[in-house]
Image (cartoon, rainbow, N blue to C red):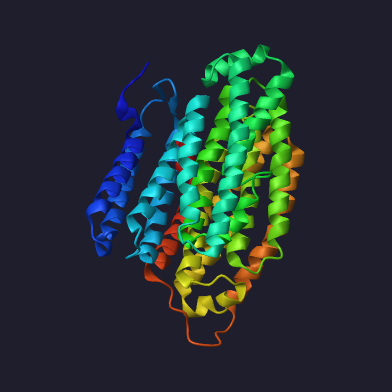
Amino acid sequence: MNENPADLAPELCVLLAAVLGLVSGLFLPRRGQWRVALICAAGLVAGLAVAGVDASRPDLMAFDAFDVDPITHVTRIAVLGSTLLVIALAAGRMRGHPRESEHYVLIMFSALGTMVLGASSDLLVLVAAYLLASIPAYALAGFGKDAPGTEAALKYYLMGALLGVVMLGGVTLLSGVGRGTAYPVLREGLADAPRAAVAAGVVALLAGLLFKAGAVPGHFWVPDVTEGAPPAVAAFVTTVPKIGAFAALYRIGADALPPDAAGWPALVAVIAAATMTLGNLAAFGQDNVRRLLAYSTVSQAGYLLIPVAMAGRTDLAQPALLFYVAAYAVTNAGAFAVVLATGRDDLAGYTGLLRGSPLVGLSLVVCLLGFIGTPPTAVFVGKVLMFGAALDGGYAWLAVVAAVNTVASVFYYLRWIVPMFGRLDGPPPRPARGASAVAVVAAAFSVALGAGSGIALAAS
């Protein structure tokens, strides 16, 4: 067994920063708690640096439960980078808040759970990571202590607790019939296990992970939390936990289950089609931009499930998932940064944004066109890889469904883009500087990642 703690250095950086932030917050005055944000940001930057170094090293298994491989590397970098953007978004709004330090620390612990979720290769570690990623997020959803936030937190918690218990039942069943909890052991043991028991265990296990991914049927919390929680928290819960959830789903399909066990490809493909279709249909009538982005994240979850369905069926599945999830993370963070910068939740409030704040308006246009999959944004490359994985895996019908949904999504994104070209009726808006900077950086990185996709894919 490899028991070198240095193999988990990025996770340890996040843990150390969270603990230091929590302890520091106990002694800092209210107006000085902004220093906790700096501590957390420093931990995230250090984690990014170490994760970048680790990405150049050979793959290994740490503590017989953590895979340190390309999936883990991308998960780490995407989670750390997205969390850094969220900390920057939250810093302005939380300045001077009575529980400012706790806000940053909860974000860090949830991000840590997400990183472990994406790297785990054992069902017991998977459950622990699920809880660590979820419980702080429940508290964050209700952090504002207002009526919408309290309702959102309650729905989030109840659905997470219910589907988490179902997932725990699936873990128990699979470990029983598979004679172990480690993924390699399960892959061998489940091959001879009763098919009905394996199918029931897989469906139950999927329940919890689909909740974290915001996919059907565990998506009901997404619009309420996105609208009711503070904007920075909404950006976090619709971006970061999804990264670990999709990485975990892919590992289960590729490493823990025998080929085609429980009809994995067909089951996940049907869920993917239902998720992207429901998300797009629900987004059409939304005038609240946060609810529109919520259903947009649901539809994006459907696209991301396609390479998960193709796990083990084509070599394109893994690069498609990893590139798409990184592209989605930066694009979604950029869109929410614009919402936070402008402070406007209705579509009409964005009229004339390109005239009043050209950089912020252009950043939003880039992010929304990125969701569609317009070149040269990063999501475009992710969607091309996703279509290739579906076709190469023998699921041409799923590629057609994804293409139809992509075309359909153009209309509701244009409902947001078109008013930005209109004339201003009053004085030009003055977006918040910090959030505006995050939006510009995210949009620029989306374009850069798309333009440099050849280099990124070659390195992976």
